[in-house]
Amino acid sequence: MAEQGSLVIPQPVAIVVGASSGIGAALARELAVQGWRVILIARRADALQRVAEDITRRVGPDRAFPRPMDARAYDQIPQVYQEVLREHGRLDAVIYSAGVLHPVAPDEYNFAKDREMLEVNLVAAVAWLGQAAALFQQLGQGHIVGISSVAGDRGRVANPAYHASKAGLTTYLESLRNRLSRRGVHVLTVKPGFVRTPMLEQAQPKRVFWVISPEQAARDIVNAMRKGKQVIYTPARWRWLMLLIQHIPSVLFRRLSF
Ligand SMILES: NC(=O)c1ccc[n+]([C@@H]2O[C@H](COP(=O)([O-])OP(=O)(O)OC[C@H]3O[C@@H](n4cnc5c(N)ncnc54)[C@H](OP(=O)(O)O)[C@@H]3O)[C@@H](O)[C@H]2O)c1
Image 1: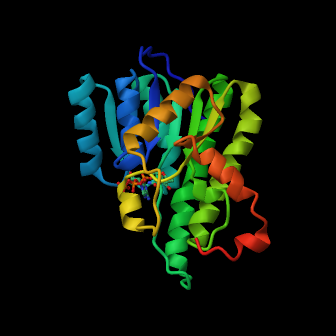
Image 2 (image 1 turned 30 degrees about the horizontal axis):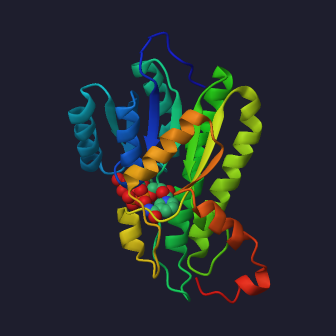
């Protein structure tokens, strides 16, 4: 396992996986504005470069570092952590925002789509965040942040594998928190509602409401990191709606078509 290097950099350093678009890109910008260095991970090198250039324009050079790769390149993940520690001397947060939502018809069961959603949304999250857990428990500090979803709170008819991937991520993060809070490590679970990003446009759900910008979601997430919160909904009012939805008995929930 890699260790913090001896080089001392004043700014805290975060890895953001899924930083080329939407919530991850907005989070990288917000962290940079608040004084962090950000390592930007996603597949599209050109999109990562644009996010990095935007950060440089806003806060100056040496704050954003694109590292194009597929989040599922599991063998490369330990190497990325080692590179970050070698080149920046520290690592303070790992944020997993990468995600895929393939639209599926109500009678469709497509393993290729389901597999990609489970791999990107859950298996790769475990690969990245497990590595962070091993490092941060040694250090006795650090933030682990996972972008889950309200979609993980109940198994709706809409998209079984997407709901399962988010339920799995929510439970994984809870387990990490229960292991690591006693070791000084902060674990934050984020459950966005509807956020105006390419994913929402592509999914085209029938009914959207309380839609927020990725910038608002990013501000909520960075505030929650600062305050050491455990689970947040963004916007916050989703907590009450999901509490209600979680308590609908299965026999009634089955008859709902959303
Ligand atoms: N938008 C919403 O309403 C909403 C609501 C609840 C939860 N969420 C969750 O929020 C997270 C961010 O979603 P978003 O709305 O910001 O979507 P988005 O704009 O489509 O961004 C998705 C990000 O995931 C990255 N990604 C996808 N597959 C990847 C892979 N194999 N390897 C590396 N990176 C990959 C994409 O980068 P590349 O394509 O460049 O690889 C992109 O940066 C997701 O986990 C999503 O499930 C979104």
